[in-house]
Image (cartoon, rainbow, N blue to C red; front, side):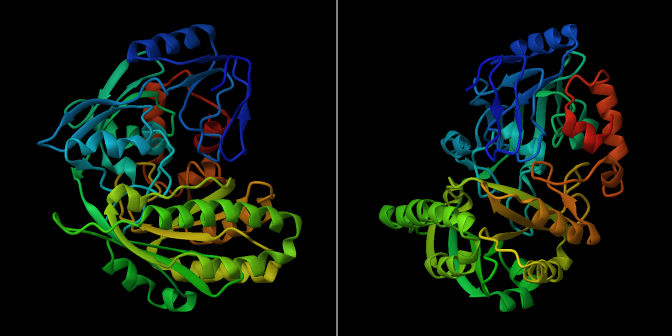
Length: 437
C-alpha cells in the first residue's frame, strides 16, 4: 500500500510511478467524486488493482485510485448464473465467494492475483479451445466515465457498448463493478506429464481439440514438453486432490523455492542454464489428481519474472514454436524460464486478442534480474510475421498504427473512447502509444 508522493511499482518491476495523489474509494459515489476532482484539476486519474501487468497500462502519474476497498459480492442471480462483483475483488477470492451459491467461473488463468477489473481490462485468459477469456464472461459492468457519469452496461442498458467496455484497457472509465456469467461449480481431473516436444508438436491440433483444457511448457535447451491436460468432471465424480505434503513439495519447494535459487544462479553464471533446465524437466510435471476447478486452473507463483505473450492463429502454433526454438539456438541465448503455450476460442470483443479467430497464446519469460529486451524483440518479430496480437498487459513494442490493422473494430473502440473520455482523463503513456492521442 502506498501513499501520496510515494513510488508505486508493478509486480514485475517493469513500471513505476510517483502519483500526485492516492485515493482509496469505498463506493461508486467516492469514485465519481475522485474523477470529478481530477477533472477539475486537469490531471489524469487511473485505477490500480494488483499491479500484475507488465506493461504501463495502469501507470498513474496523476491520481492513483487503489480499488482494494471496492471488493466483494454485490449481487447474485443463481437462476441465471450471474454474479456482480466490486471491481477490486481479487480473482483468488472469487471461487470462495461464489461457491456458496453453487457457482464457479467458467475458466481461469494460471495466476489469480489480479483484480477482476484488471483481469478483464487487460484480456487475461486461461486455456481451452472451447472456452473464451475472462472478459468474454462479462455480462455487464458499471463504470464512471470521463464526464463523471455512472454508466451501466449490460444486455438491456447500453448493450452496444458491452463489446468495448468488457475489455476496455482502462481507457473508457473507472470500473466499479463487473457482472460475470458463471457456471455450476465443477471439479476437474488434472493430468500433468513430461513428453517429447516433437511428439507434442506433431499432434498438437488433435490434443487441443480433444481436451477441455490443454497447455504445455517447454524449457529451452531441453527436448521435453511438460503437458497439462485438464478434464471437466460430471457432478458427483470422486475428488482425489493432491495430498497437502505433495502439493507443498511441488508448488512451494520445487516450483518456487528451488526454482528461485536456480534462476539466481543462472543469472550469475549463464552457462549453467541448460544443465539446470534439464534438471527441472526431471523434477516437475508428473502428477495426476482431481480437485475443484479453481485449484486446478491456478498455480502459485512467487518467483518474479518479466513476460511477453502474443496471440496467433491457432493453426500456426507448431510452426511458430519451432521458429522460436531455432531462434534461441541460433542466438546462443541461455533462457532459464519456460515458454508457455495455451489456447482459446474466438470471441467478438473489439479489442480481445482472440477476436474473430481460434487462438494460440505463446508466452516467453525472463527472470526479473535479466534484461529481456533482445530475446523479447526477436520473438516479437516472429509473432508479427504470423499476425500476432500482443497481450495488453504484457511487454511488447507495438503502437496504434500497427495494432489498428490487427483489430477490425479498432476505430469503433476509439470512437467509444472519444464519447466516454473526450478529455482523455484516463490517459497515460501506454494508452497513448497503443490507442493514439
